[in-house]
Length: 79
Length: 147
Image (spheres, chains in turn red, brown):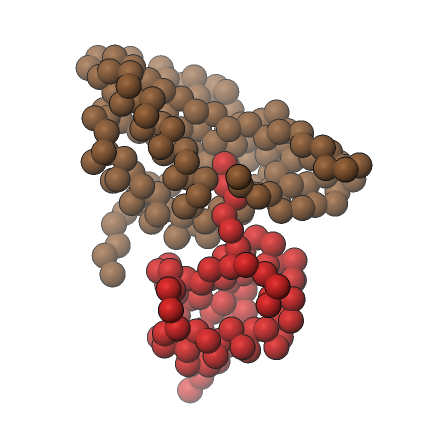
């Protein structure tokens, strides 16, 4: 059984990824996920963004639960 | 994780002036109100080098934005003596000169309405996961940055 997670990219990050969502096997932790994403999209390493897991902001490295929805969000620019 | 029902704030495209007028009219029955404060955000035709902004295309992490807006609403109501507050933000394409944000606070007296409105606008701009893609007249783009 695949333990997949969904990654959602927002704002200017979609210029780098050329997609809004990605389904991948759960790499286990936030830092492992970041390593994996930077390998796939090297320009992400130059981007400023925050991460939310299931709508909650991630402050430090933590495990990623099964079926998590992970959001990568650059600085907000509403209004 | 507690899930409260969060009111939708998103309006597809620009916020029409008639919508704002209707919203004001609806408060005629709330006769304890003595002062309203309204903030309207309008898309500006910024000139960036050779390019002029023609529109802003707004996207959002909608479910997270609505949860956050619910928190902001609770915070504003606990801080100011408000009768009511209404917030609308555009999603999708809004052309220059059109309205993209409508914040409307009402209170018994003007000071709390004005302060709450200002506070709410600042929180919307810094805390809601919304992004503006500035579309140029030549169809190029850059991503908006909030100051």
